[in-house]
Length: 324
Image (cartoon, rainbow, N blue to C red):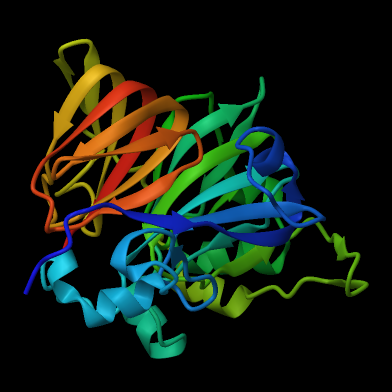
């Protein structure tokens, strides 16, 4: 059997959201549908938005199908589903204040993975902040504050700026607020429990969006403790390689930032294959003797059949690997 040794380039999937805008078009050059487009599902095997492969022998096939039928490309993984999901989110308005379940709760109640996620802040307007964490010391206090709608007292705030990195384990109350664009790396899950949605009405339905207070009370981690991260950076030539998060801080994924200037050679570090997103700049990747052009907004997977690759140009790259 001849193993394919080229990157898997992916066609993004776009989702309209009540809080979305048009930055995915104006900032990244995507051809997006009309309306308030909030999410670009850039690397996805999830059934709510699987990517189509755009090149090579699997051109036109869905990523989850190739993952299932060609495990050699992914290092013969244990997970029955493609485990990660990479998105770009355009918070033109604030997202609902929400929380996600862990694997155990999600598998029992939603029949899918839990959702731990993280954000690299591509852009934040001056004064931007996240809703992040909460003040309740006990679960009963959390329940009482939710039942009494004591939102200002309950929710925590975290100022953010362009270039920040934020880790959001399952069980963390959180929300992106207006004026923030992030690249999100997460477990492949679409389960969200809304706690508060500003009493706003969806123009399409004429109704308020559903809240999930019972589930939120059950899955929120109490008390909240902000994770301590151990970010490390290494200078390689004129480029900088930063490990934003990996084990033991994160049990599900490793995430890296590569500031590429000139030439940078990489290999898989903590997983058998690597997910790559170009969030700024232009350049190329050379793997197995072939060179592919890259530009802002391109997303692809370097499969396990490629052991080493070289990137050239001036690019800001976010990469991730699944930890099994």
